[in-house]
Length: 170
Image 1 (cartoon, rainbow, N blue to C red):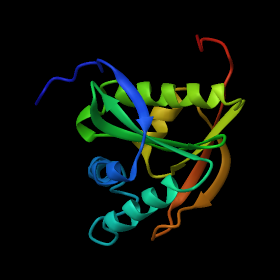
Image 2 (cartoon, one colour):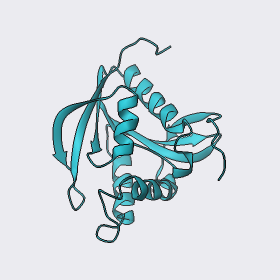
Image 3 (cartoon, rainbow, N blue to C red):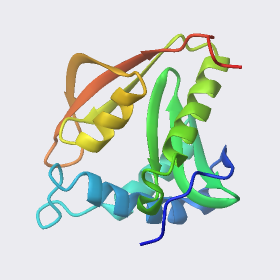
């Protein structure tokens, strides 16, 4: 196993349609690994074509800011916001635990704060224990609001919120 090292330089740059295949290639293994209890692959395999189609649609939707996460110039993840919502965030499985996801999270929240967002929110699958721990460790708080995914089997999503204060924002 390759030892994990802290990210050298993590940046967000605007996503383009040309990035979508690489983004989906990063997203699929992470989604399968993190959501195995939410979307059992024998019954609900990762909908690669639908996910790619949605990324392209989101790229053309005003108000959705889609980015790729790069580490030292290599695409290692994705992030998106929609107004005050942290809409998507994920990094390559091999970068889990390295600090890349937190660096991308912090960069995305800084953008949202700079755009005037005072309280950010997101939804995470109830069965995504790893994702929930990540957000809770970073100060996100579950509101108790529940909704359902559009993807079968329509699992429960939990809403989390985080006040974006100016403290520590540099």
